[in-house]
Image 1 (cartoon, rainbow, N blue to C red):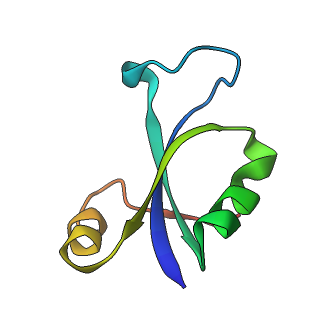
Image 2: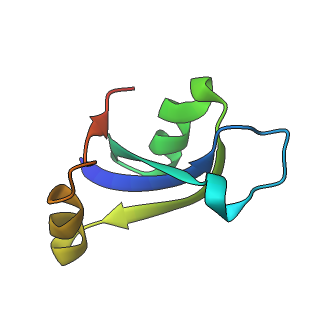
Length: 70
């Protein structure tokens, strides 16, 4: 399993605005699986980033780091 950081907007009916972008961490085997896990939330997904190495370590040290159980 790998950890992905997903940038998204909660409202799919509005044009994405940078200030409204949120992020969530998801454990999955692929980007496709991430999208499948988040499908029920109906997020407007902007970008999915694979976290590994020093990037993952940096994110894990963040107080907001929590993997979503989907």
